[in-house]
Length: 196
Image (cartoon, rainbow, N blue to C red; front, side, top):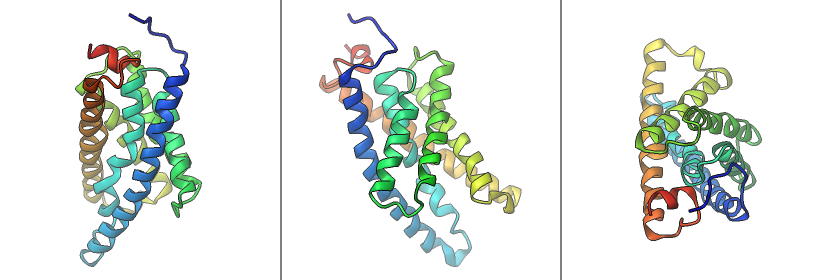
């Protein structure tokens, strides 16, 4: 059994790179999907909900990389690189997406750090997803003018973002990680070793 270290091996860097490439594309697709949903909700005056419904998608690189590698920095690094790839692929929000990536990744990273990178179960994955939700929502409040909304509407936005986060970055990323581990593809990673 390999001893757990905080230093990154080449295979872990490659794993994070693959996660970032996949989610960079997924994130850009999420932008188009959220824009479509927002446009559909505009006649009802609910266009801000379009983003919130899919917001959890934009935390997936952080929680999945953190879950697979179980090392300091994995969540932030993965989220930032995925954001850079998303921008390079044509996200019209530009470099501010990278700032959002730092903030979103930090939310998940703080949760993993709180457990000293030793506990990685469903509950911690849900908390990491919620951590990204909270930090990103605070950023939206500052950056996107959420202060203009009424408290009940803000609460609705937050609850929808939280549910999206728990589904995509919590539940689905845990399923993906566990599924990959069961195939044996992650034998050389912390998650794979925990499934042996």
